[in-house]
Length: 274
Ligand code: SAM
Image (tube, rainbow, N blue to C red; front, side, top):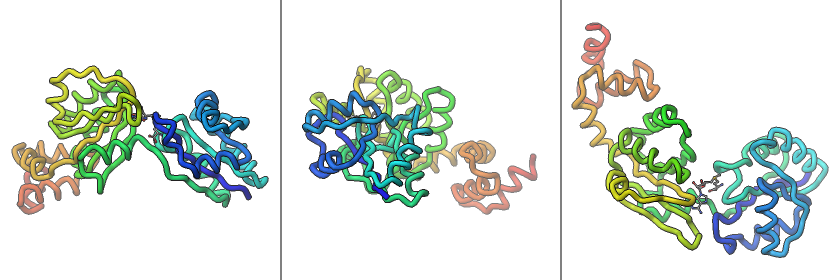
């Protein structure tokens, strides 16, 4: 059996290739990549000249079988994407999963990813976090996704495109509240920039945000959230939890806990009075 290597590549600065990544890319039998033109440019910079095969979101369903076959024939295979870690908002998960199922060895090399680069520099707690990646592009599903994150206490990481950033910030302000965020733009590139502040202040500034970006959002401050919820009627408070896809029993339990009353008081108010 050969070995599958998942290899991260630079997110902007070509010098962010590790020596080990270069060694492995030189030594493997085949390199599969998202866009052969991009990877060719990167490898030529390091004087690596190999035939590149394509593996991207539109062909991965078929291509993973070819990779598994080659692994079984004893070949070592590298998978790279256009930038950062394979599998992180990029193809890579499927071939990794299938290779494991087939008993092939899989190794991922450490290297660049926009998510962690942004998180660590954001100044927002980075010990516990939730990587969400891209929100849905449509407004209504995006709204639902944000609603499901509203009482998550740890830092949130999102990827976003420049033409959607303003709409996303508006929705975040409306749904998550005026939280402290960091927009990390063009990481590792010439125009790398960090915009830190409260969402509403950033919206007011009217920045024209271009390029690639990550949004780091501070987690919910549960004390503030609880006091906001306690200012609702019991019915509205209960509805709030139901909208988070929490079942009725658990929703009543949470309302009781927030309000410091017994579950039976909430039950009487919601079910018996109905
Ligand atoms: N696999 C990549 C990784 O590990 O970060 C992510 C690929 S995803 C298709 C592309 C998104 O990652 C961009 O839209 C942006 O949100 C983020 N991104 C990639 N490079 C970036 C950079 N240099 N600066 C800021 N964000 C970046």
